[in-house]
Length: 254
Image 1 (cartoon, rainbow, N blue to C red):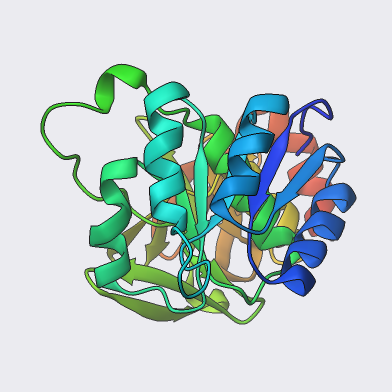
Image 2 (tube, rainbow, N blue to C red):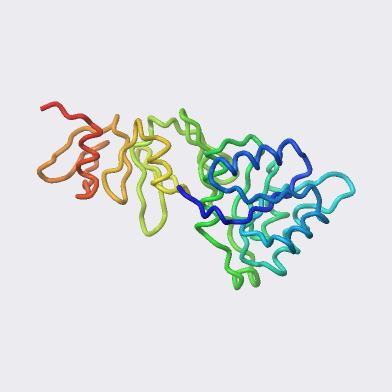
């Protein structure tokens, strides 16, 4: 994924070491215009001098300081459309309830990786906040994307994350602008784009259609003449645009 390099990023974080790590990761993913504040007052100066396109906000800024939530409330009064990603080392339901009125795009713990940060920013910029949606009834909770490592997916189910081994996911699919993982006979919703999953798991998953990303290790049969595959007893179509790269990926014996 590629970002606009002119985006202004505001980091509000009281720990200098962590804010510097964020800056390095942001530069690595192509976002060099980073402005760092360690407290509410510094953030307000940056807000005026360098209006942000995205804010990464620590919730707790230390004893005696205004919180990141208070900054977000101020931001929403003047810049209601700017995405906010909250940073916290102790993400709980209580924190979510305290922050949801500020309409955050995402929450991230402080065990960061470049991919997790890139994914969170991509989702935040993909689904901008509408100013008109800030008033009125409080919104329903947005389904969190799965936490990913290369052995398991962790899908948020209610208040807990359910671990699903990667090799048990039959395929990912999109349906009416929503994405799901197919595991057995069950579908797990996810906010992660198929193209992101395709890039991250290219060794074991292959795109066969604009709506399907399949686990190649679980394919039962391929019918090139009908442009279909059978996987876990289900027949899925092979899209014309994906046919050649998919078949090349499999290195079919002839």
